[in-house]
Amino acid sequence: MAFNVLIVDDSPAMRSFIGRVLDLSGLEIGARLEADNGAEALEILGKSCIDVVLTDINMPVMNGEEFLTEVASRGDLNRVPVVVVSTDSSGLRMERMMSLGAKGYVKKPFSPESLREELERALGVAHHA
Amino acid sequence: MPSELVHNGQTPDGRAFDAARLREEALVVRCLREAAADVLETMFFLAIDREVGWDEVAAKPHHYVEMDFQGAAEGRLELAVSNDLAPVLAAGFFGKDESKLTPTEVSAVICELANMLCGSVLSRLENGSLFELGAPQSMATDLETESRIGAGHRRVFDLGYGDVKVCFWMWRESEANPAQ
Image (cartoon, rainbow over all chains, first blue to last red; front, side):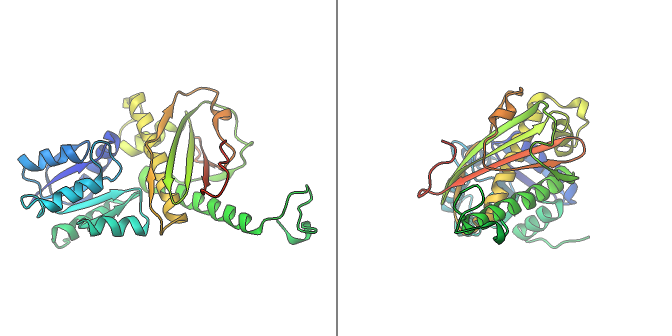
């Protein structure tokens, strides 16, 4: 089964890197959509079939915390797992994001393997080497 | 500072010996080294050849980026990547041939390096605190780079292709801002 992924990050360079790492991860990826911030991501989620979201925290317009809060409050969206991908890997920040509804947390820097593991956990799929 | 060089609580040049500050400096330097090695190897597939003294590297043009952070403490990370190394880093990051990179892509990657380095250092130093990272600001490449770099905790990493200079400042509300 191929998964449709939405990458939310205000840096085009980081979105491109995450896309490349997804390609290397071995996960079967269907559509790969991108958003510049949380507000754009909500628009895309409203009109596309997305299996998992990868989001940064520090973004203009709507940051990752606001985005997670909005997703959790909306019955039409809260079944889509959101995985945070951030340079901020302090214990307190991770706890905060998980309490807001994140289903996983990938610390930058990250390897393709660690991204894959976190995505598999969030999607509830088993690893097949 | 070896204890034999401390006399009546003062260093040979007359400054007060502050063991706590020295320990903190050693911790910051260790975190900078670990974070730099981790970020460069994992995200750019490059290893640090060696660490060199600040004055040992030849003066040459660098891509310069600075970013501020706020939270339990305030501070700034300044990064300068030599022009010979910058495209190598960008090529590793994008998985592209160096000749196909645009200047915008190279600048964006140096900003990402600063962002990841800053987050990685702070997560090591202050794991129980929350920080807000500002957006990295890229400056035009010129020979001002040397004078731009501040007097915080400085390290220079030689990657073979060129060098990465990092300067990290952090201060708490109770302390004077060393950047002023």
